[in-house]
Image (cartoon, rainbow, N blue to C red; front, side):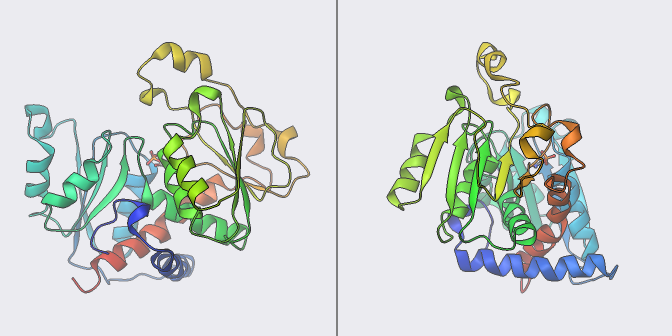
Length: 300
Ligand code: CP
């Protein structure tokens, strides 16, 4: 693996190798040990969209492995003077050993990888993919449910624009006997091409509009993303469609995941229930990103 752009580029074997490495990294963090395997290496964070978790967990991951981090956001950079993404990548790949990029345009990370002399990691490109989120989601499932094969998972919320959903659905299709339920308003259904892909692989799924999820192992909740809507009237119609409350969860065994940030889709009273794993999930971003950095930089 030279770059990490899409879950479609990596095999189940690669995924399992990253998850195994992430467990070693989690042990390192829990034992309060340090490592200097990336000493002398520099990570460049290029974020053209807001981020808390992805940017800071990459920074934490690099520092925990002894590396350094430089940051660029669109405000205050020469992007404001009209510099292109391609020129920016050519310049920054001369300053760093690895680049993490988030961009509002689908395909931006792939384009960056064509002009970069160092590995590119896609930290989210529009509504397309968010592969490092998917890897930490898979890690959360294995740590909190104990398996990925033979699970039943319900996805809830913005399934049309949600890149975390698109990446994770694809990744789960590589595992055995995973059943999926897609719950969304009709305006925000999973894109047809993703459903076609599932049908071609004989993956069992159903679509619903109501909060009907019996017998599941994972409830994966997503935010309805105002920033992705071209028509604000459509956003107004669908915002606040769902809110997970205590009564939907109490007495049930499934775990609740959310890539975060949450806005209104999970009531704060749910946070104290044993089912709520979304803050644990965001913590797992650090060991998983440590593993990704190690595997991409090792031997280079
Ligand atoms: N889950 C996620 O990508 O969060 P941020 O937008 O805060 O990075």
